[in-house]
Image 1: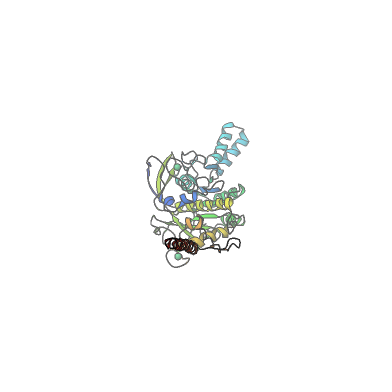
Image 2: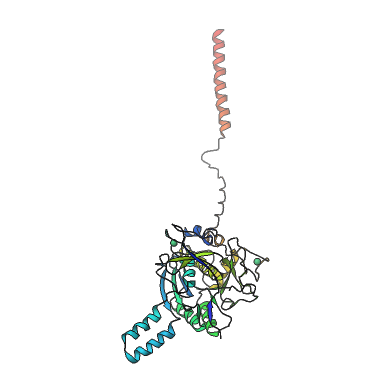
Length: 376
Ligand SMILES: [Ca+2]
Ligand SMILES: [Ca+2]
């Protein structure tokens, strides 16, 4: 069986952003700052299963609440066995490090983390949900590959931590029972699992886990909301999100532009985090409890693309943040019916003026009569 890997993606040269914070088009063109007035994702826990993360990146510090290196569990077992036999403190140190070292040495995991929740400060870039809490599960090694078992274990570990959303910019060709069971467990626990559609382009079928109907699968659009040529098609494709030329965080406190459905996925997971946070804070007309509640909210407000209705190339269409999360325009208040007040009968001003004029005229006539009488 092949291993799973992060979705093959397009790397560009690392760049140094200008002074101050840059809002990428995935933020500014998609009305995210409008939603931030209500919520920035406070308290929502999002698990990212990837190549790890540079948690101490200046633009991620504070966003990453937890990290676990699952890809290092074989290493962990090796040193644990040795330590049990020898009692050697060095073996213990290596054992503990194998589990706690979730540092990203690839770049993919840190990039994805930044898109979701980079800090809203005067620096670098900003994520969709800057106040959301990232739970990092390093299920892919430093080469970008990991086992299906590790991905399954990562999902179970995240669920046991009580995460609200799971974001997975990874995939493989196999329908693995362990991964599927983990995804079903998330579905039953009402935790949306957001998955990258994949970057093979005109392939008619999505890879796994995006192919599972229980997941929310995401394809990529460019800055003009045109479907990226690499974005996979399929019956189970759900939504489209920005994923071309996205600037985000990479290790060593740097930034880089990447393209791929890998980039669209944390964006969509971030929007779901905003939706959950907003509902927790303000409630809503309809619940956001189950995965299908989330899918329904997203699909009802999505901007239809390509063929009318849900289609293989763009799913339900582009996630429309304003329609989904901005407050609907307040309904016009019905005009109150004028209620006549019985105590003060209505006296139209014109009529009043006429009466006053009549009275003045009357007095003038009397005066005139008096004067003419005097003259007589
Ligand atoms: Ca920032
Ligand atoms: Ca369509």
